Amino acid sequence: MLGENEVCATVGVRDLSAAQKFYGETLGLTKGMESPGGVFYKSGNSGVFVYPTTFAGTNKATYASWTVSDVDGVVSDLKAKGVAFEQYDNMPDTTREGDVHIMGDMRAAWFKDPDGNILNIVNQMG
Image 1 (cartoon, rainbow, N blue to C red):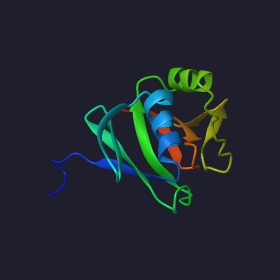
Image 2 (cartoon, helix red, strand yellow):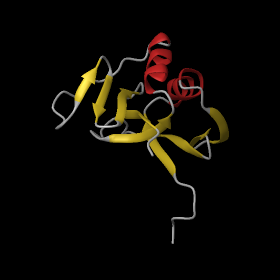
Image 3 (cartoon, rainbow, N blue to C red):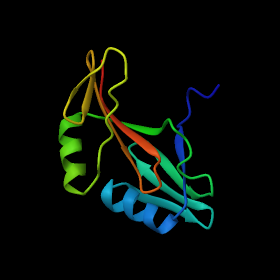
Image 4 (cartoon, rainbow, N blue to C red):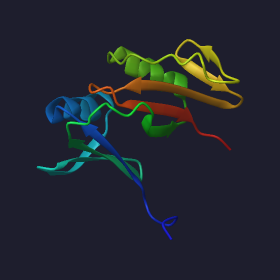
């Protein structure tokens, strides 16, 4: 039923202005539709909808993941823009090379937006 349709990550933020700077400038997403209810950012064939809420940053799991061809390169680029990466040393069967977590053929890194929402980049597999 839904498998033929695009999906959109939805991320709640406290400060929409700070979120717009982070998602637009720091992450380089293209602003699409904007309304009083939030802002949609295009990302490839999908996107991220950022909206104001008092519940921002309360989820302790990953909100959105981007599949990239070069995790290490994206980590380096984001670090140059001031993004700090998370270290998860309690994940089973996982080693780390700096900020990149390695799980077999998968390479991934996690970071947070200004409200503490957890975001992820992961290598393209298969």
